[in-house]
Structure formats: structure tokens, C-alpha cells
Amino acid sequence: MSFATTVLLAVALLLAVGCGESKEDKAKKQVCNARSDLQKQVNELSNLTLATATSEGVKNNIKAIQNDLKQIKDAQGDLNSERKAQVQQATQQFESQVKSIVQSVASTKSLSGAASQLQSAVKQLANSYKQSLAKVDCS
Image (cartoon, rainbow, N blue to C red; front, side):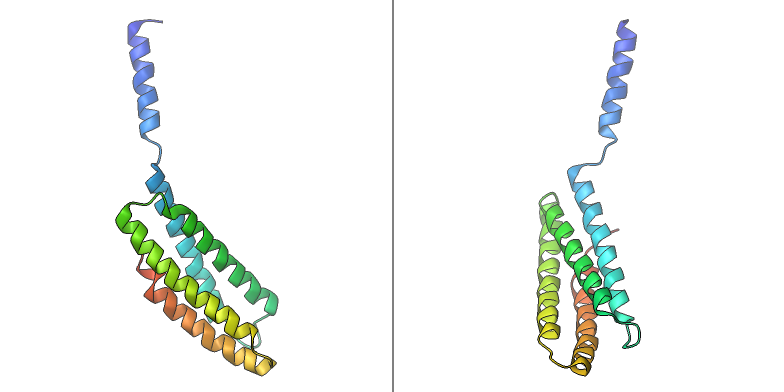
């Protein structure tokens, strides 16, 4: 192999390695993808009515929200310190609201009470999302 070929291969290898995403870029993308799905889940819950809501559907939305929160937490360690602090605070605030809502709805005994409680809880959840994770910069 000639010197020129070796140099070209080395440059090509360096370019290929340099074109990959950094851990921070991957973490930011993971946080933003999870945040986007969270918004989708909250919107789906917000659009439910007594006629369209099913316990299985609501459970699936809540499970998806919990998975999204886990993805965000898993990615936090690779974010820069400023973004990490912002994401941690937003995640903690939103997660606290989710737990409160789940406990509140689960403790309701009557079906009509659960429906009323769920409607109120979903409004709180949507507001909590706007006040916390929606503010995380994904641009």
C-alpha cells in the first residue's frame, strides 16, 4: 500500500468517526423524542370523553408516559450541565404530577367519580406538561 493510499484511508477513517453523533447529541435527541411522545400521550388523554375512554387505553397512555420519563432520565447523564439541570427539574415536576394523578384516580370508588376525576386530572397533566417539559429546548 502506498503512502498516499494510507493517508487517504486515514483521512476517510477520521472523517467517518467525526461524522457520528456525540453522546450529548444522542442524549438530546432521546430527550426530545421522548418529550414529543409525552406530548402525544397527554393530547390523547385530553381528547378522551366518557364515550371514547377505556381503562386499557388510559393505562396504555400512562405506561407510555412512564416509559418516556424513563428514557429522559436515562439520557440525562450525557447532557451538558445546563440542559441536564433543566431536564431534571422539568422531569421531576412532571413525574410528581403524574404520580399524584394516578393515585388520585385510582382511589376513586365510583365510575362517575372516576370519570370526573380523570377529566380533572388530565387537565392538570396537560398544564403540568406545559409548565415543565414543554419548556425544554429541542431546537
